[in-house]
Length: 255
Ligand SMILES: Nc1ncnc2c1ncn2[C@@H]1O[C@H](COP(=O)(O)OP(=O)(O)OP(=O)(O)O)[C@@H](O)[C@H]1O
Ligand SMILES: [Mg+2]
Image 1 (cartoon, helix red, strand yellow):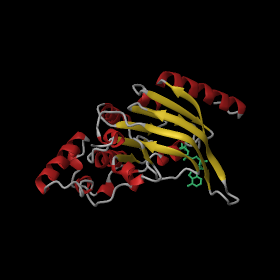
Image 2 (cartoon, rainbow, N blue to C red):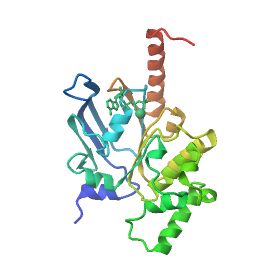
Image 3 (cartoon, rainbow, N blue to C red):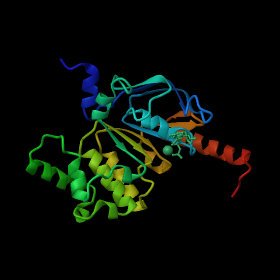
Image 4 (cartoon, rainbow, N blue to C red):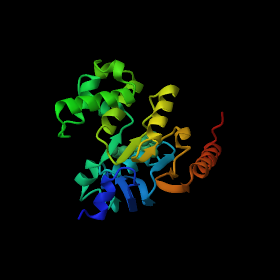
């Protein structure tokens, strides 16, 4: 029988359970540049749409990169569907897609079509089925007209859509996204929002585009490496805005 925890990671549509227990992180530990960026983070996610917000440098990317083992916490533990992100990183990554802020990090192949197809290299699909799946993904992400274009010549926003297509075609159960709309214009930000709204995946997304989080289940606010608010999008965003006002007052900056 398949263990329950694995079934959860492999069943699209069910929220992937993510547990962050007493996680702290120090970059460049044991050097004069040692810098504590997360302090005793405790989170238990069982929702399908989770937003992470907070000032620049508050620790959002560090945490999100920890969720698929890209960064190992200095202390504490993280599990995704019961798999420890350090000791079982392979299992976690097999079912996780990561969208980086800078899409150049994830574009590998010369053309748009080849790059999307590259994601399926280990899928075991026969060539015609693979090609058909790629065409569907290109269409879904409005990339069909750009299919034969060199990927490095796309605009920043087009690259971000390509990165999203190349990740989602592998059908991960968990999608981690670190400011995935930074380069998108309003039209493509809306396209992105509507695309992710319909996805069966569990999504954890760090963003400064607060409007993207309106229909999320839960939003967590980070400040100086700590969770300072955790609730509905309306509650968390309102808290964050008040926090921002205070920061502006205490730092003496006004527009
Ligand atoms: N590889 C690293 N080595 C040393 N320090 C780092 C490293 N990565 C991040 N930091 C530091 O950790 C802190 C948190 O960074 P992080 O990227 O997690 O913030 P963030 O909330 O994602 O910010 P932003 O909104 O600007 O993306 C920052 O002070 C940053 O300078
Ligand atoms: Mg960041």
